[in-house]
Length: 410
Picture (cartoon, rainbow, N blue to C red):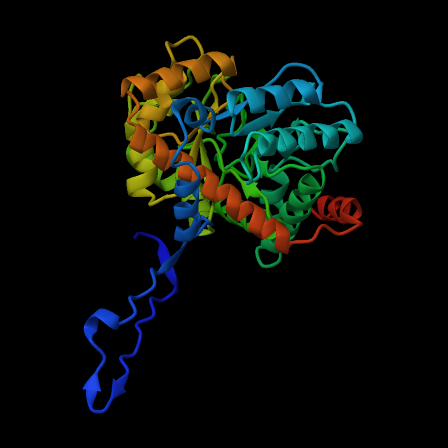
C-alpha cells in the first residue's frame, strides 16, 4: 500500500523437528496478518475492526455515518436527537450553538452520549471552526488565538524556532478543545492568500508565500496530532486566490495547473507529509482541473488529491449549506459519488440523509463503496480515541494556551 509502513511483521512459525522427521506442513502455524500503520493515522487493524462493526448495518445507518450535521439553537437535546435519530457521524458546532463553557461541555457530552446510545462505541466527530482571528466559533469561551497569518509571521521572523512556536500553539489549542469535548478542529487553513483581492480567506491564511504557508500548516498538523485531535487542512485545492465568497456563490479559480502545483497545492502536500488525517475540499470552479463544476462535486479534484498528492485519509466537503452548491439537486449524493468520504453540514441533515439512503438502496451509491468510506471514517475516530487516551489534558491547559497564543508574532 502507498504511504504505509509495516508495524508488525508477519511471524512465521518454526517447524519442530522430532526423531529426524519434520512436522507435517498441515500443522505449521500460519503467518499472522501484518498490521500496517497508515500515514494518515489509523492502522489496517482499525479499518478491519471498523468494517466488522458495520457488517450488519442497513442503508439507514450507513447513510447517517456519512454526514456531519448542523443544528439550530443551543439546546444539547436537539443536537443529540439528530445524532441518534439520523445516525449522524457527528456535529459541527457553530458560534450560534454555544453560550458559555458549561453549555459547550453539556453539548459535546450530549452528542457523545447520543452516539453511544445508538450502539456506536467510538467517538463521534464533534468539530468546530477554531482557526483563530476572525474564525473562532468559541469566541469568549476558549482561549483567543490570533489569525493563522500570525503563524506565518512567526516562522518568517525566526525560521529555526518559529515552527516550534506554531506547533505549540496548535498543540495547546487542540488540548483545550479536547477539554471541551471536541474530537476534530476544522483547521489549519492551508490556502495561500493573494492579499487584498482575497475576500474570503485573508488573514486566515498563513502567508502569501507558499513555502511559509507550507511550514505553518505542517507545524500545525503536528501540534494537533500531539494533542490527540483531528486537524483538517482546508480548502483544497486552494481558496486563497478566489475573489468571490463561496458562502454566496461559486468562485472562479483561473490559475494554470503549473501555478496550482507551484503555489496552492504546496501546503496540502506538506500537510499530507506531516500525516494529516483528513482534508477538506472547498467549493471552487477550478478551471485547470474541472471547469464549470464545484470542486466538491468533481471526481477530477478528488483524483488530484488521491492520485497526485497520494492522500489516503478521510476527505470531507466544506459546508454543503453554502451558496456555491446548496441549490443543486442532491449535492451531498453528488459529492459522495465524486469521491468525498463525509459531507459536512448539509442545509437540512434529514433531507440529505433521505437522499443518501435512497441512493444506497437504488445502487446509485454502490454499497461496497459506502462501506469503504464509513470504515475509513470510523477507523479515524478509533485512532483519535487511542491517541487522546495517551495525551492527558493538563489542569492548566487554558494558561498554557494563552501563553502559546501570546508567543505568536502579531
